[in-house]
Image 1 (tube, rainbow, N blue to C red):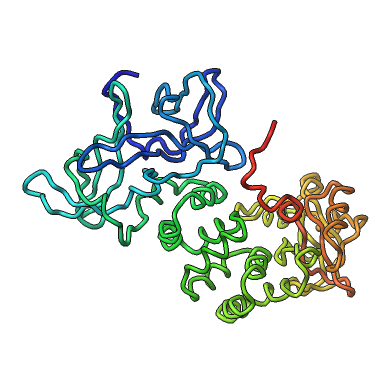
Image 2 (image 1 turned 180 degrees about the horizontal axis):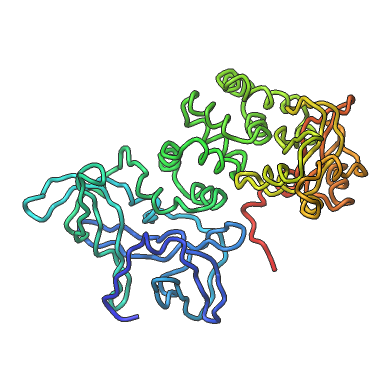
Length: 415
């Protein structure tokens, strides 16, 4: 790539990274720079690349052959697969510079004006990549503001300890990330920055992200929220995930948050907390797709077509006598979506149920739940009480979360 090439970092976010053979290594998540004294432009040290299993590694700029509009290409040589660990003096552009408030030194008519960083440009010199330009927003709101492009030496304030930073511009960059990927981004942030991002996310988005985080990080993040906000986020979580999180907290903290939740939202969580977390009752969700025997196949397919429904829960519906809220009336059987696809739309679902596979009691231990799912090639299994009332369903992803090593998110996948 020729000297003088300029690229804005926010446009790199999410781009695929390819090795010299054309194989995709991962995706760009950030750029690591070293801030320097005075007005000397920061030097880009490398890119933060997310590879398999949401593992983030550091790729030195010397290994970057080109930064294109649609991809990043690496040159020959080896890349360390060690998980990235930020060192003293290193700064992540997207995670830590975006949304920072700085002061303009030029042009003269705007000197002393406070502005917000919205993007940072890298430029290749003969020997290095350096930060040369900064896109900043002056004023508030999109209609009453303007974006200026200024030189790095025309701003001040980055050497100072930052106060409240905000999160709007970082969120604009990462808004399309899946919850699991955003959880990985939060993992790499400082506690302060993580709290700012959490405060800016809406309850549903934060709930989705929390469900993808390790339990210790969940507890830490929730501890930084006001109790009322924490209760709202718990209400937005699936009851089984909310119960798992509360189970990791101090009993007094968990009880306080449960009391703040709406009673109808808190009740299924309380029911799940009554079971040991290594049993079917502790693993299950209390909100599977539940239908009555008089429902048509067309209506059942419409229910599982819901885009917000987790795939493992959309794979089957549970047919019961009324009432249809857990604990339901008597459990009649399960209707698998593949069977539903083969039936005429007007057929009653009661004629398409599978009653051969036995449901599990809530006391069933994790090992037996795992064996049951594997033996019958199931993605979920119903859980019923002694009166054959449906209590919920255990999905295979919930089982995997418990049988995999606790730090499985930190390990690279193979193959």
